[in-house]
Image 1: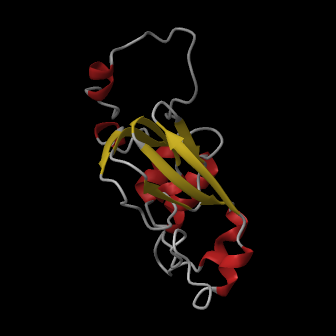
Image 2 (image 1 turned 180 degrees about the vertical axis):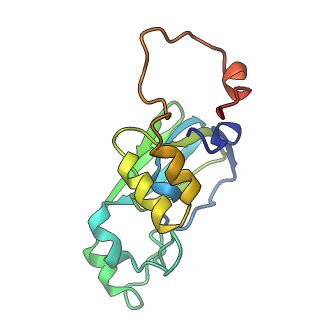
Length: 171
């Protein structure tokens, strides 16, 4: 994610204990997400963008009130109308979660994985909308600047991961 210094925070290493789980949430910033699992197994539950109201969004957060692994239909009756998708990710699998897609995950084993959030052509406008709604004026300005390098260049040279991480993206 140029140029917000995310190159120094991502990708992320996940090390998780068996039977732990996340809350139902949307990744911040309108970013896409991928995770490569190296060991163990994870159960994913995710929902399309049109299901938000049925998931009981918590105001001013990126979270939802429903526990998708143990739902209480008396407290959250609209959850029965949400269109849920489910996947079990095993070692060696890579999963992709599109921007603004509510999801929760539960570890079925001890796990370790590598993940990353990113902005690309398909979620560029989601990212800009997120920056505006969160009043991140500088980020919005940087991502709409004529100086922002987009896409691949035919003269692009291969660099090592260490070189990439130590690159200064500011002019």
